[in-house]
Length: 424
Image (cartoon, rainbow, N blue to C red; front, side):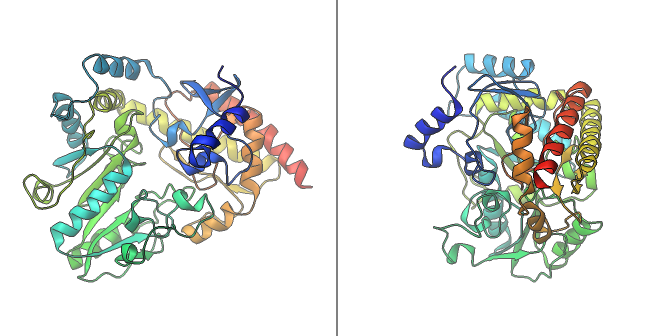
């Protein structure tokens, strides 16, 4: 062991801003000292003090197979043995691109980058370049990474920090960004280059698209010649084999991916139809580049992950999320805690209070009522790790089998009872 969580955090604070490399990890919105992960295996992580947690963070989505899956570990090790980065094309890029294109209806061409932020940022640039228009429409509470133009009214990326915006983002950077309420189809005109949306809003807790919302966006974009962008950094290859397009039957013009397609390694991707993607350099005038794009290790991990995600895997994931949602709802309710646990496929959210949110304003009321931090710490003390922020989703994996779910529900019942007792 390398030390206690507290001592590691103290060391980190001296050399890393806030002691973390992504803000939510600092426990700012739940209080307390973050645990430092020593290792992970399947549904579990162990901290620096040797404590085991049932992990529903799973790196915020990439761990769809669980931690350190042997097939992924072997694929990465084999790729590393041949070299870790070349700055030249590799067959691994072609193979993973073929796999992604094969799974997504309407997707002809894809370009790999190194993060979800890069993917959404590049898709926006491409949309502007292809349409010759400037304005972008996004939705309050949807988080599309930390590029300047997309931080306006972002979800978990800024909401967990109690921020309304971001210092350093100029008025000019967001002047062409229009923010609309989620689940309401906005009025568009011919100045709009694109509408970007999370098909399932997973950065304001979890808010499902209302019936007709995604279809309405498709119709509205078509009416004015704007492009529809699905940010599937979270939903891509998690909801279904073919992502949100498969799950909801709505086809955007551009897709953004990340997380699952890297098998836990840093990766992102964006893609669309052949004609639209032909606007990218080196064949078009929209420049985008990255030295580590298409990294061989990430390509190998992504390929191995997608190969394991067959139809049976998605049935198992959905069944696990359904059991977990039902069990947690019963555990919290039995303790006298009012809750809603929205679920879409294998994605799961948890709110304490009512009603079920349909947009960011409603989600924020429940996220900020003070109950989530209490439940978070009660669960953590008993060995269940949720994300340290009320605006995040839960990510059950293939490794969370029936026994793990049962153990989680049992722990949750005890944790909820303790919290309810403290509230009396």
